[in-house]
Structure formats: structure tokens, C-alpha cells
Length: 140
Image (tube, rainbow, N blue to C red; front, side):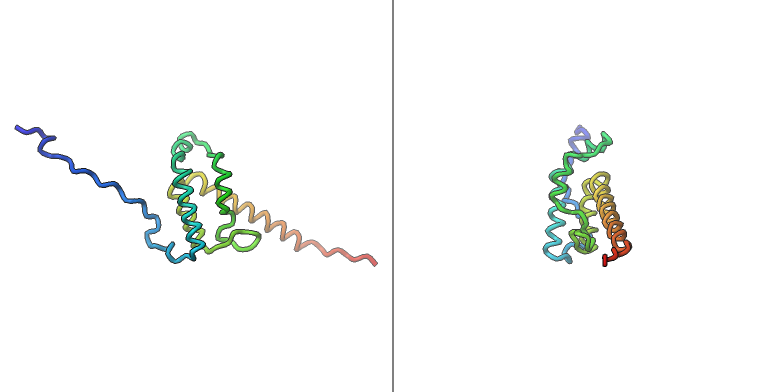
């Protein structure tokens, strides 16, 4: 009599397809330079962050060694206009955030938004102070 494992041979499982975080294919509507930014963020997150994200999550720590490489991405002010920000569309900001969250929603994405907001508020407050300062009176 045949055993259960002999009668029910397991079929070879197919590998899972790569995740499609852009279900509605909105990235196709971006300008080529904005699409390049999204692809650059995806490559960075998959090559640098994904291999260490679980370790830092378990240790409840932040991967500070990634900050210099993250700075090189030049993402400060993505989707914001003026004040020396990179600029870009709101869709670009959303897709960059989505790519970061797809790999590691806890560390870099949250902190990148906080840092951008703090820098922007700091610059706005300096500008507001300068604009509200009374004009210097010229000497006779």
C-alpha cells in the first residue's frame, strides 16, 4: 500500500512575483526625471535597507550608518516648492514615500518626512521673521 506522501506528491511552487506597489501604474504618468528618482529610491531601499531592516526592527534601533547614503539621494524637500527644496510633483512625493514604506515603513520614511517638515518650518520661520522685521531707518 502506498503511503500518503507517495500518493500526493507536492507540485513545485512557483516563485512569487516581485511586489507591485504601484497597482494603478501611476508612475507611468511621471516625467522621466521624476521616474528616475522613484527608481533610484527603489534600488536604494532594496539594496541597502532591506537586508538590515529586520535586524534594526528587532533591536529597536535606527540604522545611522545609512544616513550618508540616504543624504546622497537628495530627497529633502521632494514634492515641495521653494526654499531650496528639490521640488517635484505631489505624485512624486507619494511614490517615493510608498517605495520607502514598501521596504521599511518604520525608519527612513518616517524620519525623512519629519526632517523635511522641520527644515521647512525652520526656513519658513526665518523668512517670516525677516519679512516682519521693521525696516532699518536710513541715517541722515
